[in-house]
Structures are given as C-alpha cells and as structure tokens.
Image (cartoon, one colour):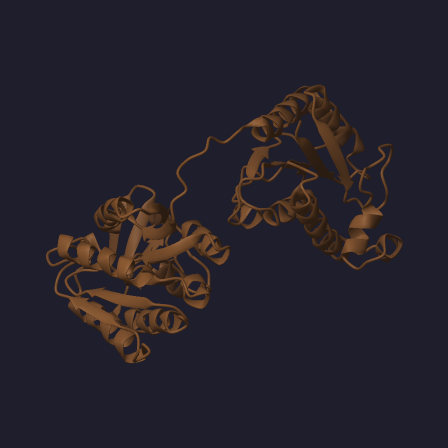
Length: 400
C-alpha cells in the first residue's frame, strides 16, 4: 500500500492536519507526517519533527523561534523540506505528497514538491490556488486545490475540501500507469502560427522511430521543455518556435525566462532551431496592453490574446540574443531561417508582413552566430512543406 507524506505547519494547523491524516489512513494508506512549523506541534506527534527539517537546512529550530524572523524561518524550512522530501522519494519511503496552507504554507509545501521527480503524486490545498500559481507550481505536475475557506478549523466547507483532497492524493498514489513503447524522445516547440510545421514534422519523426513531445510556447511550455531537456529525457530538440524571447525582451505575458534555449545547447543535445514567431509579442485582451504600446501594430489572435508586431530595432536585439543562446551549443545544431515568413501572419499579404523587421532579425542572427554553426536559409515560409522536410531530416542527421 502506498505511503503518503503529509507536509504541514503543526504549530498552527494541527487540527486540520490531524483530520487530513485520518482521512488518508481511513482509506488504508500509511502516512509520514512532517512538521514544518517553528513553534512545535500543538498536539500531534510528527514522524519527522520540525527540528529535523531545520537541521537539514543547517539551522537550529530553537534559534529560529527565538529570532522571531518569519522570513528567515520560512526560508530555512523551505531549504530543509526540499532535502527531506527528495530523500524520502529517492529512498522510496514515500509514494505521494500532500500539503495544505496559506501563502507561506503553500510556499513551503510546493517547494518540496518542486524538488520531486515528475510522476510522483503532488497535491497542494491552498488559499491562493484560485490566483496565478505559476511561481508555486513551476514546471512540475503539482495539483493545486483551492481551499475555498482558510485552512483554519474543520467546518462544513473545509471538511469536504480536505476529504476530497485526501481522496485525490490516495487515488493518484494507487494508480498504475500502463506500460507503453518507450521510444527516444524529441522535444518540439509550437505556437498556433507554427502548428502546420510542427505537426507535419512530428508525424515524420514518429515514423522514424521517435516519440515527439510538443510544448506550447506559452512561457510555461518553454520552461517545462527546458526542464525535461536538463533532466536528460530528450534525445533531440526541434525548437523552431522561439517566440517566448520576444515576450521576455519586450515585456509580453508569455515569457520563457532568461535561460530559454540554453538546456539543449549546454547539454549537447542535437537541435534544429529557428526564429519562429519572433514577429510577435503576446498580451491578454486589448484592455490589458500597457499604454506605452498604444501606437504599435496589433493583431487579435482571439478575444483573450492580442499580438503585437516586433519592430526592426527589437528584431535586431532578438537576433543577437538568439545567436548568443545557440552559440552555447556543445553538441550538433543547425539554424534554419524561413525567409518568406517566420509565422503565418508574417507572410506577404498578412498583417505582420514587415520585410525590414525580418531582415534585421536574420542579419543579426548571422552576424552574431558562431562561424562553425550551419545556417540554412530557405526562400519559403516556416510552414512550407519544403521547410518542414528539410528541418526534420536535418534533426535526424544530427541525432544519428
């Protein structure tokens, strides 16, 4: 029977965690109760006391309590619980993890969960689950459950939420994932404007014996792809949609972070890269666009996403950044430049067609790229069948 780790501040939420523990054990599961509170449990006896968590962070619990510094205490417990949770998982002493809390408790609980591998069940009952939780979840498979009311006492609302959360983590822990054919993995980046390219390439690569994982270039998608490459899952990268750098540079809402495009390069993973969709910066609905951009060229992708065309000046800097990231490559890499359009709407006759901006992008890439890195310039758009075929075949050549 799976063992469920429960992470909680037992000094302030002992009653709530006692109820959660009971609900899990009623389903026949064993539990490992880990205290991350500073003042000591009010009535529960944890399996892993807070002093052990603090010690794992190189701190003394009594000193933390005496210092009366909440920020220092939370930081210490985060550091300690990450080590303990990862150790319990690595030693196969716990099969799933669950926590509850407000903003501080969520910070501690999800930090521990982010230290765990993909596939290990992770459930967080949180007062902030209804807001943007990207910083809490990161690139891991954490299930966030809104607590609805504060995690404070057992009442008709919390009783239901906590019971169902217990059922959720138990069900996840009990689930046996069916075996499949584990073929080598290729990571591909895609946006709506490069869908035809990636879908056609994916079919070809799968016929060649690979499994293709497609990541939507929405910031989170790019970060997740980079994480899986870093973790050694990926045999090749079809990174033809590097649009997240436009948001990172200009200030859009779908940022992939400053390390986007680095994992494959530094890890020596074979890669084909292209400046797909660097013609666009993403914002939400038009009403959310900062006033400083009011004179820019926009395109309504859908009611919730508004695209802004990058300028020649921005494209020059994007080309420099693109080349800088590719220059980190320690393995085989080829750059592809679709000269007739880096997205559907950048082609001739489309709203983002701007030859000067495209030329600024291509020139900056070529001028700043390492001389030993091949560049394939093709007089077609990024979704053209000839571009697709050349790109996926080149990736196979690099892998082989």
